[in-house]
Amino acid sequence: MKRRIFRLSLAVMALCALTLVAPVSAQDAEPIKIGLYAPMTGPIAFLGEGFQYGATLAIEDLGGEIEGHPLELVVVDNKCNPTDAVNAVRQLIEIEQVHVILGGGCSSATVAAQPIIAEGGVPAVSATSTSPSIYEGMGVGGNIWQFRVNPDDLIMAYAFAERIAEGTERIALVAENTDFGRGALASYIPLLQEHGVEIVSEDYFDLGTADYRSALTRIRASRPDALLVVMTERDGSTFMRQLREVGIDATIYSRGTLTSPLFLEYTADDPTISEGVLEFSFWAAGLDPEHDQRFLERFGTPNSPHRGMSYYTTRYVIAEAIRNAILNHGEATPETIRQELKALSIDTPIGHIEFDDHNQAYPFGTIQTIEDGQPVFVGTIELRPIPRGDEAEAEATEVADEEAGS
Image 1 (tube, rainbow, N blue to C red):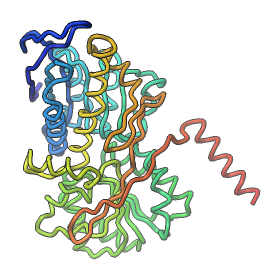
Image 2 (image 1 turned 60 degrees about the horizontal axis):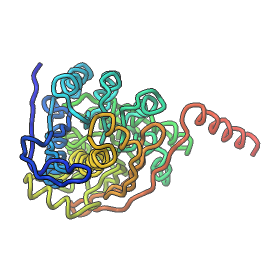
Image 3 (image 1 turned 90 degrees about the vertical axis):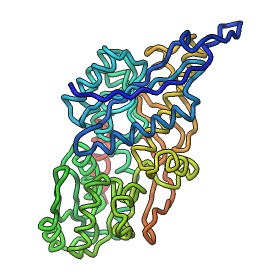
Image 4 (image 1 turned 180 degrees about the vertical axis):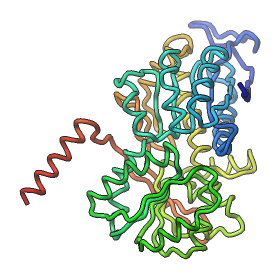
């Protein structure tokens, strides 16, 4: 199996004894391994690269160690593919024997890895996988080892669908043909319909699609007031170029990355391509300007949602759990790290992070747009737990009864 392994370690002092502080050599300090499984090759390898950048910078900002233990980053390629994700996680757990896992970048990879993570007994933290199905299996859903920092698409749809519906009567839906794209639209469709918005078209495109013009011409003919586009930077830049060529005059909402600095790097020849796009997400340029600048200086490329979320998840969530495991239990093992993730309550630049009974956190929702070819941070919105399963059905029945009685 093809794989890429990246290691970053910095030797410092060993962990202090309970009553004595004794300096020891770097060789005596047991390293703590953070495993990362992400798409390092394939059509969205830029996302995996971004994850590696974010985690690397986080470890550097931690001084390469936590409580005297060197940190080692081990990266394996999941190709954003379920089969490769399973193999990647097995490699991290069985061969590399990592203490904690970050990943997997794509919802399909994260979903596929769940049984292996549960079986292997190593805590894993998602920073960007947004499929609602992941929620059902975490925590009290059965897999106590999986945690998720980012909100899923259902959480975000509940927060943002009403905003999209304001002033929108007819909407066209467009997404990449992945679990991410399909999951996002599946979350928004019923909520938009509840708000009385007519869905005039629904299209999914394979990753790497080069020509969207025929579909865009058909969408234009359906006369939408707005489009909701769920795509990441690379494919989204091609789509938006051709949307402008076709001349669709509609409000563009994004649940992808169409306003990120990285998107603007893909459209550097015409940064106004995404002018006026309103994007709803869980990361935005300008949320933490000092970090955005540090990222640019360190890697020579701008920050983005995957890069930023990888950094914050490693720097604040995983690192704090490791630190508390050492301080409260005397050692950082997969089990003690899991316990401290469950007990975590910390304020971060992306909001307060604390996990519910399904091991789901609720950071800020973010709103961003493009003005004069530059990303503009509009603000944040509080994200909250939402009704799911039987609770959601009961709420829908209650709403229907109220409407019938009115």
